[in-house]
Length: 175
Image 1: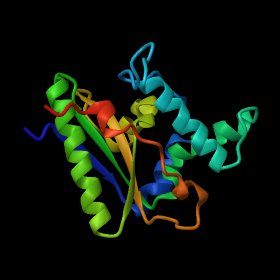
Image 2: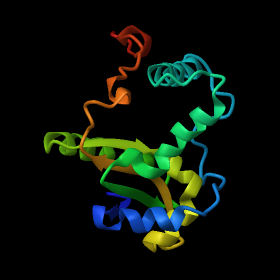
Image 3: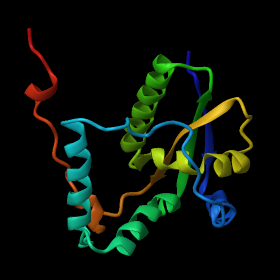
């Protein structure tokens, strides 16, 4: 069905976009980014990744301003030179959300093949109205996510992060 609609933010518009959203409030997301009362092993995996990232960046748990400042880098696309916003019709259901995820993965692999790095970002659901106003998306579309696109900074500590993963026996059953 190709239920997605992409709005591409080229490097020539990044500064305009940053100025546009600078004074916009963070909003309630248009959907739950995580399920309520996240259960194991997903809850632990989510928190461990955060702890690994902040440890790598030398931002201790007590440094709330440092952690918030790092989180706010999402809204600057981590310095990427371009971005994409993915929308889908509000009437679409879980299968079409799945289609969007598969398409994003394909887009990310194609970018990697072209020498680009990507970072999908659901955090943009917290600024969905601001993004929608900027790109001019119609009301029947809902922002699914943004995605930073640029060149990987090999010297950046964050790019050294290798997250822990569940073992194949934890998520696959071989019959």
